[in-house]
Length: 336
Image (tube, rainbow, N blue to C red):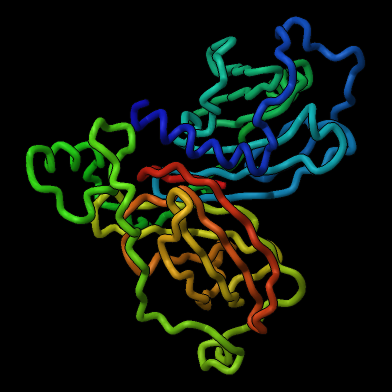
């Protein structure tokens, strides 16, 4: 499996978590998938675009990602016909990574592509530099919707500020460099599809940190922070582990129910093959203007993590939300 395939599989996590599209339906030919009844559609405005959606459907914003050269916004249907039309994504330069790896291309018109797998569909419509992706099981309705879609202003899908990027050195290159030499301690952070034996017996490196651990609400860090009001949730996010040996794991977590400027306490434990990679300190973080908090691991890890366990607390130390995220053990950007 090449690195591009790994990246596509990793980023498809957002479809698994927010769209529920791990395709458990029986396989159905496109010509047989037209519904026996008509689902009434109504016009809806999503700011970035206009589109007709099923009556009594309700699309909730679940994830937004802005970066210099790419970005995406995802809405999940939590109302009527949520199986027929599961979600809508608008993106720039991310479509190839958002199409599930099991999807097969059915049709490829001038501006529209239809993908199918086991009775579930993803339809992509391209206008200029922007794509709209519809996800669902009713091809007839999805086709009606995509035909009605009109892109409006999408300049806010990308951020004008550059972001810090992980060194571009690829893991496969790192494997080549270490060939026929005595491998340093950290060379186990590499693509697991290589023929070199994976080091399993050595104990993973334990995280150390100089960041103050938040234990009680009397800490100065907590006292100076603005507390959230009401219930807060983990609303999705992004993980990225750099390929260089000293690269850390970065997490961007969307705080649903929180407001920019408010602070929360978060704890992230990383694992590989059932072994803990870090202690998982409690850290206070302020919510950014985009609704996310940004947190780097205190140390680089010997292994790429394959699981992250997140605990979200309010400033009083009350547990608000938890989530376990399965990760691919590689350097790709992964969404959930």
